[in-house]
Length: 166
Image 1 (cartoon, rainbow, N blue to C red):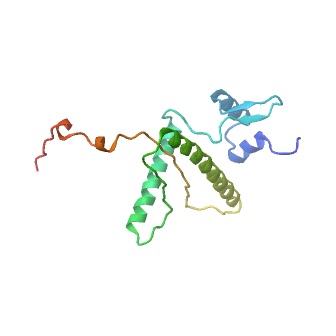
Image 2: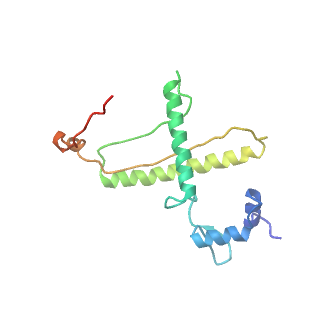
Image 3: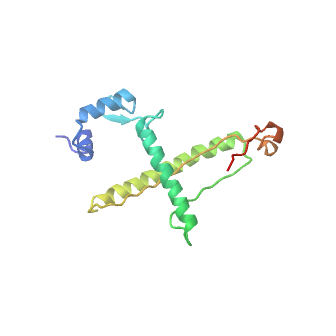
């Protein structure tokens, strides 16, 4: 056999339930990977992200939303913050700067996620296993916001409300 990493060894190291060729065919069909001129597998994306509300995407959404809210609540309820939960935000930016900052934040975030994943993967090799889990997540968000005076609709633009009876 050929020295160095192989796709077969990668798949076998993750699951015994799927044949490596089936995984590769699925990746090729979805455009996640392609074959180069020397029949080497080339990933099309830095990380696989399910698209379009598929079940894996909805699972990740629910888990990540839960973990973010749980970390925030734990920090609010404790005397000292237990979990790291921070954000950097700027308002009043031009669209150009917002797009530039978003692109740079993606680069920084992917570098951090890649490093954290590399270290966690290496540490798992010596871990006996147990009942705990760990999640390290990042997000980047940008949007156009209405001018300050337009933040809330005028009173006459609000729908009439009715009070519920007790």
